[in-house]
Image (cartoon, rainbow, N blue to C red; front, side):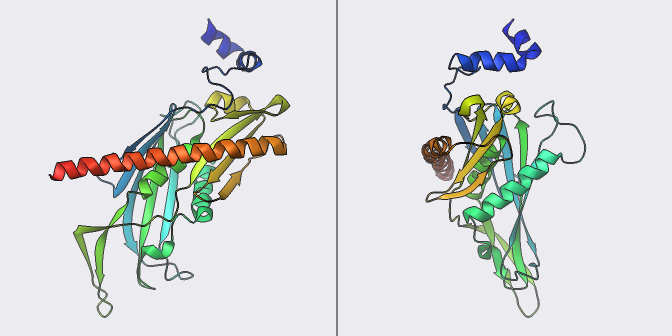
Length: 281
């Protein structure tokens, strides 16, 4: 009966729960869903991770290729993120070209990487003006249930933090490139950005880590991205304005959540390294 009521009257269903100071999934307004991180899940990628927030699940894989640098930045490599939201992850998406939402998220992820200074693109340079690395970062959503940006940034951050690149030898005179696949060099990450999303409802009611149903019925959304030291991005795609008190409350919650997410990623990486070490022994 409860599920039928939700389908027939989704707005009333949510409002009835919020009026009782509880959310449909039983969480408090500023409670977050559990997170799980799995490192190196894809064997054919240079690095990979599966990042899960509640039911929202993102698989990220990075493939590296050598290329000629862009003319405007001869000493820098480049990163090409791509977000896929296939019909598999939610009935709201259809087969065909990337949806508008997928393109918006892809551009936002690219901006977050740049603003957070997580990566120094000069570290991807093999030889200035001649040869650089290109990182193709593919993120595929296999279950869509809200806070998609948070899951994408978490998956990408975890994947980049375990990325290794093969040793390269470049002959300037002949242009010959030799790759030593047996010796891989860890790619340095400058920061670990973490994204935290909130939804705003009537009377400036703030909800943390909204589900897909909550996002579709809210009056506004706010995403705060933080690295270890500062805010590196604030994304508010329209909706009602928020008060200063609400913003400060979301900022405080974001700092604590970011610390937890980083500790989970670090723990997953440590576990992976320990498993590799034990395997080598």
